[in-house]
Image (cartoon, rainbow over all chains, first blue to last red; front, top):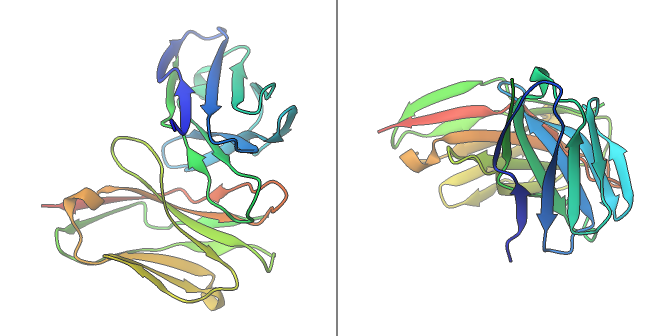
Length: 114
Length: 115
């Protein structure tokens, strides 16, 4: 099992460019999440999904869109990147069964917007 | 609204010393889960422990121990006889939304173990 994987690992964008971050999990998990990590701010939830075809906003959704067309994949899109979106992005997943189970995290994507 | 406070931004201790990382949480829910994650310099997030609100027993796992006190809304983490490999950022997190299982994270404590 690869667990949770994220593509790419690093990316540099110019302001106004668009890109998509891919998260894939091979554990058949229902729930998937996108977080951003900024210095001194911990991890903040951007968007999440409780199943294939469903998405919902988290704490900091502005400037991002997501899609969950397949159960194993959760895509995070930046339509017009801004320097404020420079961050480390983490994807996570967890199974449906079992209240309070931990989330499994991917290795992160470091994004710099110039 | 839920909130997790990790007031210690950075801690440095000499190897073999004991160190406690503080976590204070706020929630109006009576049922909730608390978590600790470790983020080593390599950057990944490693799950350490989960505790539900009905279980106030302290837990020990090797050199790690956790003290959960509902009366003070705290879930503190102690490392005994610290080692250089313990150097990392440690996050405390809270989950109360059992339909969505969202996590609210604290801002983290950067622990440096000095050899």
